[in-house]
Image (tube, rainbow, N blue to C red; front, side, top):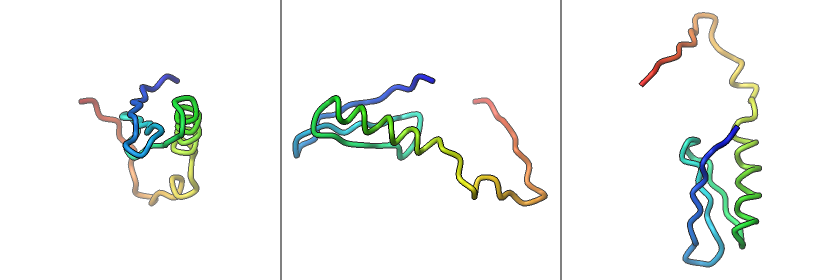
Length: 67
């Protein structure tokens, strides 16, 4: 899987890494390399299934839509 990551220099030093395709998936690092490594871990955690995801109501319906 390939995702775009936006790297921004932080005012305090270091870098902020943002994944636009995954809302709220953000990480930081003192160096560019560290920020990229940290955001890779953040992506893995973001995409990891959570028990609550499987606890749907018996009447729930999963629907795909296209925009």
